[in-house]
Amino acid sequence: MFSHVIILIAEAISTHQLNKATGKNITANWQNDFTLRMQKAYNILGWICIGIAAFSIVPLITGHPNNIYLFILLPFGLLFFGGAGWLFILYYRNHQVVFDDTYIVVTGPFKKVTTSRWNKIVTTKFNNTTGLLTLTDEDGQKLRMNQHLIGLQKFTHLLTAKTGLYAGIEY
Image 1: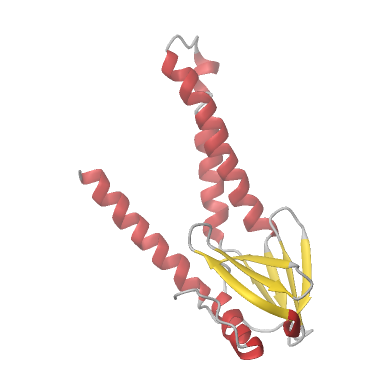
Image 2: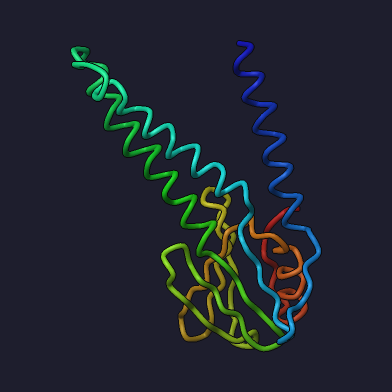
């Protein structure tokens, strides 16, 4: 019971901190572009997950596993925590949104780059489950961005001003 309360409090604090950074003020660079990057918490959480995945193989190294639960937990630890850690780190290192008064350039976690113009954006959709804001342009291109980008609030305000579309993210 007590552990559930601690988990709920930790989740509430971390969600508040992640959402607070989306409203952080960002400034333009020398080319008058704005760059949105992922928060450091993604890198930290990624390495924690990788550590948990690595820790799950310790019984194989230190002795002979003779428990059937170990054979169930080992693949789960490696696949779930290792995969999640890898994805968190890829998001932190690669995912970014660069925009100015004309263009939007989104680089995904796997380094896929999608470019569009503000005047081509026709729909927006925010998915609460995945935390992705998807912009679709008139050519059918989808620009997907994570809700935890630092400065995303400025982007969504500009999105509404330039296109009249609402992002659907509550801050």
